[in-house]
Length: 261
Ligand code: 5GP
Image (cartoon, rainbow, N blue to C red; front, side, top):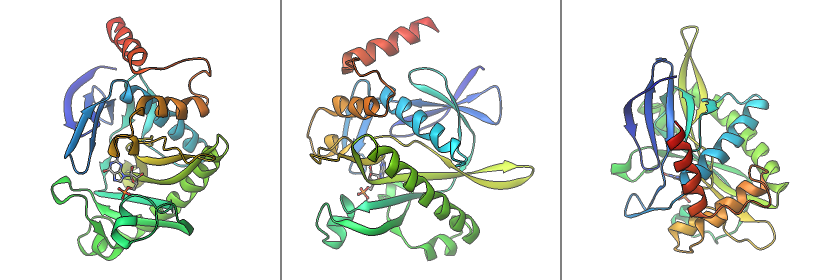
């Protein structure tokens, strides 16, 4: 497969064309941003870990019948994915209140929700990804009612699976963000899971200590982001227990891979 020109560059990923019009390459950058791009940094090795963790979760979801864009991981930082038309909505799933909902509604951080709560945000950086209602989605035709019904069913299955997967390795799944895209199958649009699922897009707390193992370490200046993401990867069985993935090691690994290409 030949890597073509850059099609799109987001805050944490770059999409490249390939010689197959239906497939693109998703490259995971080390850039970290928060608060609508007001806080920025480069954290060496973050992209490598997110690529591995997202590959692991999406392939597991595939096995339980959740169709998604992942075709295969190519190397330390890249994966081949199906080209989809992204639905311009960020779907937020909350099991425990934390982050924006605590500020918006005055709910205490750590409040366990009786049922998973799904929120919708318009994917628009200029507007700061505003919270929207299902009615806005229909009114402005960002997605159809049928698509939203299908997405909601998929979300609840994904949430059930991920809660169990993380619980098994001593991690609480507090909340996460998903994106979905449309894929043409036999001339018809099918909605599939897209983007990434990683500690950049989830809140993950250690089950016993509530230690944050996710991007809140960056947002809240807690430090040690790479050790936290590495801990998630190790617990999921992606990295061997004895491997000590420091930022430097991860960077070395990825540059070795780059030189070999
Ligand atoms: P909150 O609404 O509390 O900021 O975020 C809820 C959850 O969705 C968190 O797990 C957060 O990481 C994820 N999330 C929401 N919006 C974004 C986004 O624009 N980028 C990323 N990486 N994650 C997001």
